[in-house]
Image 1 (cartoon, helix red, strand yellow):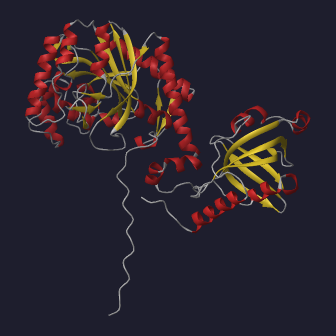
Image 2: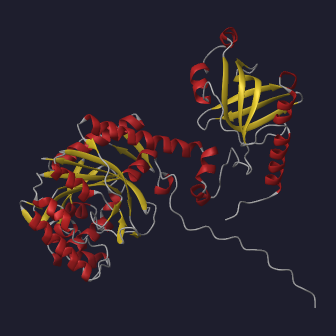
Length: 510
């Protein structure tokens, strides 16, 4: 879509032409700063006026103009580095003539450089007494209103660059997200995990049950798929002898969008040899309590109308127990009632929940859980005892061959983590893949394909291992109190902008 042109952009273009006519480069290569705005405020923000005058602190600082206040032959310019603001004081008789003329052609949103000494105004505000003014870049399009920002929520997502100029809450969200990821890395690095990188283009779309994005590699003349999960590659590394690995990775799933789903998203996945899924429950509690303490400075956080406590230990329920606990009517089933297909079907019929006719016991139980229990799991809760049908890569439970050693962690009514003791029997893994192929033949296009090389890797021998995936975007939603995943992704996927409708041709009089 073409950039909008109106009286404001035309005036700004004229100002840019005038600046060029004054002899200033319109888009110079850089500016030699002594400090950023934030550094000046952090270092001198509490310094008294007489101390600043005695020190005669000279600075060269740059930023984007937020406000201009002209008072005859003097002016104040408020500018920012994105995080903090500072004020510059200009006097006509103290600047070279062409720099005062330059000032007269500045607009809100322009980037400038200011050189001078720090002082405090009569109102006590830290400021730079300008001795030099440099032009660095012109904002052809005016920035959003500094008080109200962008009103349209979709426009905020679509033009995040404009949203960040004036929306301090949005900026704080993404700063907090960055701190969260730094804390995660410190946690695993301190425990001897090795951070690794695995391919983002896969010859086989596997590692999770999801619909992939497909592409084609011309030189190799082969189809490739954008990664839906790094799991199988990370387990290959366990086979190869790395006992603890983690990856903060980008995944892609060709599925619907919602407040909790984006086609491109970020996951943390980690694997540890000789550990079990129960070990990972403890590790997950340690990880998230440490991250929450670092990012939110406590063990409780607000989320919507709820207050979520990360105080340990966290609740643990089986999938059937969770359904029974949150059953919405008085005719509550028992855990025993949900132990077989007939009982689950009766429960689905009571609530009139539709399910695919080809779905087996596991998928039907999973659907019942998602509808009945999941929205109610606000406080951190581990859900265990998953049906094998839902877990083609997980180890079979020792006490029940229909179940696997797996948990999912729910917080704020969302699945935030998924973990299991890994299946390391190559023959059993082949059988599971073949079951997935049968489901695909029956119409399930999210079922996993067979990965012969992964089976070969398991045949070399993989030690008992547990692995886990944690949704970075959903964790960011919790820690920043955001209800939509789009508010924690800098550039979420959106529908294309509708093209502007050209004006209708003027009717001709016959």
